Amino acid sequence: MRMAMNFSTLSCAIAALAILGCAFAEAADKPRPNFLIILGDDISSSSIGCYGSVNPDTTPNIDKLAAEGIRFTNMFVSEAVCGPTRAELYTGLQPHRNGCSKNHMATHKGTLSVVQHLDKLGYRVGLTGKTHFSPATVYPFEMVKGFEKNCNARGTVPESWEGVEEFMTRDAGQPFCLIICSIHAHAPWDAGDTSPWKLEDLKLPPHMVDTEETRHFFREHLAEVRLFDDQVGKAEALLEKLEIGQDTALIVLDENGTGMPGGKWTNHDWGVRSGCIIKWPGAPALVTDALAQYCDIVPTLIDAGGGEVPATLDGKSLLPVITGKTTTHRKNAFFVYNSGADGSPFSSRATTDGRYKLMWNLTPDKPFAVRVINGFDYGYVDKMEDRHVRQIYQSWLEKAKTDPAAGKLVQRYRKPPEFQLFDLESDPWEMNNLAANPEYAPRLEELKSAITDWMKQQGDGGFFEKAPEKKK
Figure 1 (cartoon, rainbow, N blue to C red):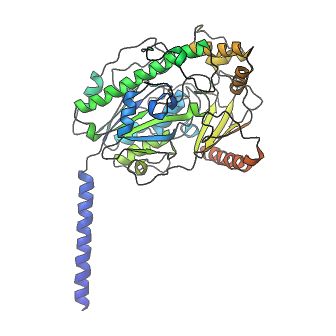
Figure 2 (figure 1 turned 60 degrees about the vertical axis):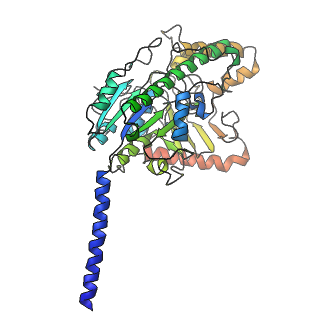
């Protein structure tokens, strides 16, 4: 009897091993997806049609992609400035842990980026277009020709897809990761076709003062959003032409918010909330309100590429959300803003749980100033006399002299209080500060405590580090 039981046990063990072996063989034979990330520049998600743009015809290609793929309604950057946004996206680490907690700061030497993580898994990793990161040792991308690098370029600059196509088709047996970095819709806003929108019909975000200059440049901004959308359409068409669309995970991100007052350079939703559309091989179309941040992208690529996500990263894989296995991801999203060393000292932190948002001004005694917008408040003399964003703000100041409502909007931007608490469900544009309402005091303390814990985890003392020189 004992002999029979042993043979039975052995037979079961052999059968189990055979099943596992088949599973491992199937996993090993399963092709890993290519990754194509298309990154915009200074585009608030509210300018994208599928995110509720009130101005029509801004993003037909992105809207079509969203209908076929996965649309994240709660994707955020940790810091709404170009350098920190890209450092977070490429490292899977948030600003104070990757070292780039102000614009133009270098990432800590020795930090691993998407290049090293995916290279280890056998991927070719390339980038075309805008860079805005350093040092090169952290970001050793294969630089692909074809897209403009200078985000301040004037007019509609030509682009070429030849280098992109060559990169994608070089070795059909090796998966690739390519990041296309557009310069649209970064200022100056002077490119694209503005004819789809009449100035008098434009609908402006509620926090903006309605002036002739605001309308003019906001329409120019929409034209550049449309240029970015055109690039998304061309990229998807190229995947179809090369017959690799079914093997490629396509991720479209709009970077940080619009480079106008109340967007980029702030922790307002118009700055930190990002559009994120993903078309993933085999994944069903869906809309998810799971809280996610840019640091989650690298872990997702590592996971899908067959690697093990390092526990040291701030991000975590979005694959369970993408494949519909879960509807939640993070309890809170967190945000930071530090003014640059060349500006008036200003520092703030913020968090949202998906509904409520707390912005904590760590320097309530200091006025808020962005060098290129209102640097004149602290004596900065701008060498670019016709800077568009400054023209917008100066028109606000002029209208505020005779219009009390305009004056309140200027004050909202120029002198924020220590605490700003918003119910994003009823107040998505963050116009009604609930911080002084006793009814919301417990919520304020809860979110304040979450920010404090996050700052400790990040090694963020809330002080002003001097931006180090860029390292080659």
